[in-house]
Length: 222
Image (cartoon, rainbow, N blue to C red; front, side, top):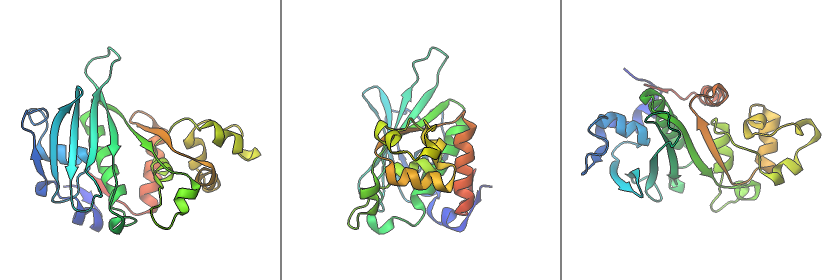
């Protein structure tokens, strides 16, 4: 049985998720529960699977989302056999449901399910925001910070590199900063919108995710 904390158990019930896969793009080799978890769908979601520009799209509809959550399965073009990566294209939780830990659990469940499938190499997203947007009172944009502290990594933007304190001048990657409290504060203040990836083969990504989940007492193990 899954090991889940109370909030995870309340909000993530794969058996309550409806899967709509008219062209049988995934259901021929994945169970409904695996699809629900791979999408990160909260309870009572509808997951619509379709082919969009040659990629498999998982579109999640749920009352706690400001707009449909979208994940794309994109085939790797590396000639190493069949494998894919996931693009977290859209994920906007309605403001009422933000800061409750639901979004973080959705992503953690997605990552762990992707690892179990063995064919997913990474999960990418365009993490939006900056310090001014982070502090905004009406619609704060904190993706650039939240995705990073969950273990997503990428190159530090040039403007961030220019603003680094002397102690962090050797840092080149986002994870070089966010693994320490002082570094996280530097990234919060000087970070900006950037493409980040969770490499399923990179232990640094996993270590940061484990630390994040431990600090927030998040349990979503499958």
